[in-house]
Length: 546
Ligand code: AMP
Image (cartoon, rainbow, N blue to C red; front, top):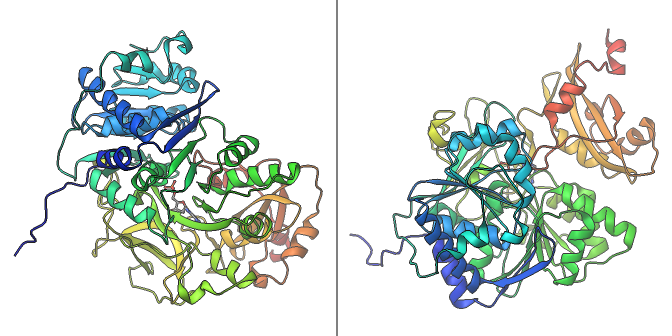
């Protein structure tokens, strides 16, 4: 017997309909790429998104076509997302921080027909345009007055392009499994792979993301998504915020410490989210200026492990609760969040911080397991680590055009490439990326744990740990350090600080001081580049071993 409930496909544009109907006047504030602050609301966003949809149809864009966006977080980008997916076309966010060759490869592989871009990226696109074989036209997010001279094919200013149609349009309806969006993985190994989100997966994921013990979003919240919409589906903030009616503050092109602080303060932002490197900049700025964060209640930190010192500073110095989160492009992207279950809720001080170093427990809709290399499940004791595998309605089952072949195991789980522990209460902790763990004498050392500890040193701004080859142990850890501006420290200072806080055999064999640690386009430490840089490095312990 089937249930007797209505057929109401889970379509992403229903989210903006809901926001416009019940939260229509909630503001969406943007620091525009042109400079001034622009304020609009959900009702107006929906109205203009309908025009985007109608105008795209006039250009011949239809169900299944890919429309690329190379844009910052702005109200126009939001309108475009909903306008694109509202006719069953697919928004494809292209990360502007990737290398030109990668961008070209990705856009051609996705066969994007239209490129919607911010003013910032016109010069970048002009350089690769003759290699973009499928793009028919460029829509530049500005009005005629700001439109630059450009060689881009059929380029038009967005506002004039949009003004050619009225908003008298109805969303298209289709199966909820229709593709809505695309995002390529960063492709640190091999070619980038296209992850294709469906309407259904995005809507279910937005529910999961907004839950009280996930991001816990409310209609009364003001949300600042610092994480760009082009990073892993924008961590769902473009869906989960309108879903609950939270107001949005969008940072546009400026994500430096002072610019973010200005928005947090002026618009009384209660909730924000980004990778640790962004928060490093903000905290350094606050240290200089003595600024406070009286309105901010919660900050989600993910994308890479959140250092203990960062959590401690946010909480103890500024009274802002840190929610450590883990996820990946293939998971839409949220996999787990470290909010408190009853077993841990009463903890305070260092014991609470110990828990917050974990990436947390999954919301309903994510199943997890850890296995050994042959797929045997490992115990949830918080100590045994193994390959982390996941399953759920918002987890990829394959990549675009079948790249990478079958990516699921016999039980339908996707191997995340992360190595993790899970404790008795279901809290997961990432030990490392499988390819980044340091293999020393047949045992594994977690580079994340060492980095975490090193950045606790008051003079250290950033730390990265890589394995360097060693004749006796196979690999030993090398700690690479960037000191805070104007600070000085010796290798002995740093190692002395770490001594006794970790197992003796985990201690780095050496410390290298550098001016800068390379980052990927999504703000993660680029371990491959570091390994390349230090590939001929001879550890001081090598001679002793020989
Ligand atoms: P991306 O798809 O670019 O978001 O990258 C996903 C990968 O980032 C994951 O597989 C992890 O290796 C890493 N990652 C994301 N969040 C965290 C976190 N909180 N701690 C450690 N690693 C993380």
